[in-house]
Length: 445
Image 1 (cartoon, rainbow, N blue to C red):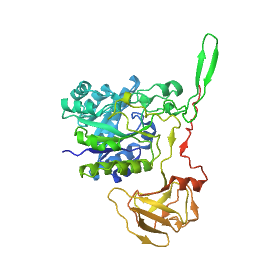
Image 2: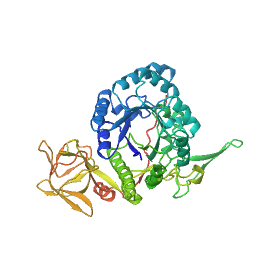
Image 3: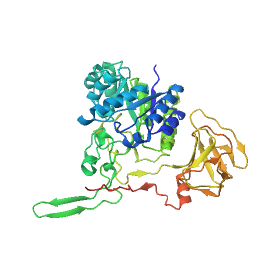
Image 4: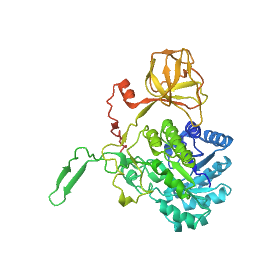
């Protein structure tokens, strides 16, 4: 049996390396506005993206380039030049949405495999066959597809690879085909600049055109008015069903613009789920415990196992995002020698150590801290906070760029975290995890 691939988001070079450290077999990312995530595209330049591909290949991993925007006529030559530049970096595949860009890629970079973006909304074997005939080697199925439909496609086209999303943000519209952001802010979702207007709370009114009377509809207590806010996909409970089907080649995690912690923890959880399934010890509760440490909009198992009309739990009506069960305290650097603060941390604090896949650490006790194991987890008690430049702190705050000395060398990109209640208490915040969406009003021309 061919082993399924775990595909993680790479919003920048650091997140790319973190994804691989925590178990990804491949990552996806890109540069420029030709990708459907403009913000993450700006975090990569050609030099750092080339470094990422070189690094991935040096450790036997893969990088897929996102060129999945839909071009205007004025952009066609720009797309052609961009494809040519990406070709020279020798990535493992291009992710493309537009049939025209597929043909252009075949002309400019005939040796680079093409993966069809989820934006193309493939749901059936007939459409899949059209793209297969165009030279597409893998289809990233629409988020709305069912596992049975995946089985039907694979039966008709056994050599075509199928990739599905298993975790991350869900779209209010049909796999990203949305106009709300373009109408309200002029930011076009299908060209990478979605303003996430579906995540806002809305006031609702009833208007009588005959009398000119308008009534505001009041929000029902405990219900909320986030009327278009979809919960986040979480298919960890169904990894056994997905892998047992034998028709899925790659499991994809959404989130190029999300935090390094999200990339690390979510990738590790699905890596463990995959490994456990192959070894006959699948335990969904273990992976859910870790996934719930991340910020989320509430979780849903979406539509892969259940049809959309069978679901009534896919909306988050009362809030746009809530804190997970944990907060990152610090991220250890790529050499494993220092840490940088991500949340207020003081001398005397005890933080949990989250290790990359396969990494180990040993107990120690010195002037900088004590490392110990308890209840199956590793912990660090901080005894001294001193930077590499000799600056001493009693407490250090998020955003401080001082590199803090560790008690011993750690595996690169190890994470230090604490429970969310403790984190809020340190900052004098309420323990309620829900938080309102802070909308930035667009400039009206």
